Image 1 (cartoon, rainbow, N blue to C red):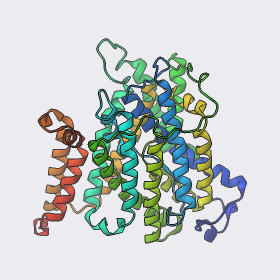
Image 2 (image 1 turned 45 degrees about the vertical axis):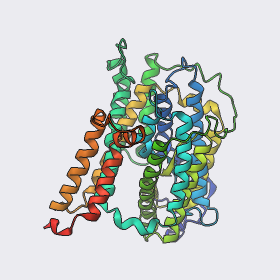
Image 3 (image 1 turned 30 degrees about the horizontal axis):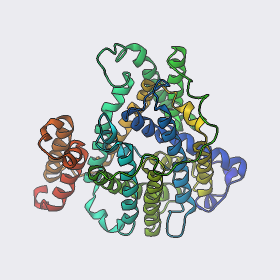
Image 4 (image 1 turned 90 degrees about the horizontal axis):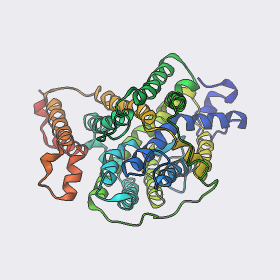
Amino acid sequence: MADSALGTPEQLKDPDYTPPVAQAVPLGIQHVLAMFASNVTPAILVAGAAGFGFGSGSPDFPTMIYMIQMCMLFAGVATLIQAIGMGPIGARLPIVQGTSFAFLPVMIPAVAGAGVAGLGGLMTGIFIGGIFHFILGLFIGRIRFALPPLVTGLIVLMIGLALVKVGVQYAAGGVPLIGKPAFGSMAMWGPALVVIVVTLALKFFTKGMPAVAAVLIGMLAGYAVAYGLGQVNFGNVGNAAIFALPKPFQWGFEWNSAIIIGMCFMAFVSAIETVGDVSGITKGGAGREATDKEITGATYADGLGTAIAGVFGGLPNTSFSQNVGLVSMTGVMSRKVVAIGALFLVVCGLIPKFGAIISTVPIHVLGGGVIVMFGMVCAAGINMLAGVDWNRRNMVIFAISLSVGLGLQLVPEALQHLGGTMKVLMASGLLPSAFLAIVLNLVLPEELAE
């Protein structure tokens, strides 16, 4: 509930209202706490998949620190663009931008092992995908008819299903290797389970700040246990610089069709998610529908934020749904509050020591957190599907799309005769599933619903 000292109900619903500084700053920090763990986790996952290691023993460990930095910095920059606005760019609403989980099923295969692109190709794909996302703002309103809850819910569910394996793998100790007996041991699972238990306890048995920041506090509890077990290494913190500026295209500019197509497709998915978040913000915080100008501006800001992040080694940005819920809970629609939180992220992103401290989180502690976060992605998809009329037509669309997508994801060897680009796109499972759902929904006659 909103504190009455903040202003009248009419003021609280006004995005241009500025609360007193003593209250605006804590509210802004609260927004950062709600999204912080989710924002930096993709950078750790992608850097780890690229072989830059969890722990100070890796010679390329500074790469992980840099990517964490960039995710904080450009989440802040993108949030400022979204909240403050630049001409037609930005919804000028209290929307918090952050690194998107949705892109992980495309990004991790792009850099894992031998990879198909490496970080240079990945960042190029993010940059071009951001430009494509920006262009979507020109006509986002005209294509919503092709994306009913049946399609969008399935897409979100498939994103979650593509990621749950990563959560369990990390909670067990990382990538299972021959001669790595610690994998799956209680030394790994113990701190991960502490994260899960504390997160659930806070989420369901507390209110206010502890409930809002449950995942972050849960990870801190797991981190404390791991520290007590001697699993935390601070070797790189002392070596990290106090201040550093981002570097454009430091891994080069490398064109890779598979990654670019994948990023453009996921930009489309992200744009639809942002439409939902903008609508949720205006409905929950101000009791009204979002305007076309707000939805268009939000899509522009999503794309611009992602493109800029890609130039400097950051990951794709999107609106954060957990912060939409926070606005509904506090009742404070002030975009100035969100801008304060964004400035905090920008400052943190310019301090490598901050990223170095975050990178000391052991992989299994991170795994406990992402099990919860990725599970919530699946649950969000199921929640969207709950509103679907499950007639014969919709059940056929869902069944075929899920079976093909999930099957190809589980048995990528079935695609061994495809070329490189098509194999990468199809093996994700997400793209074929979404393509089938969209096409079948458009072409199958409504008579099948009877």
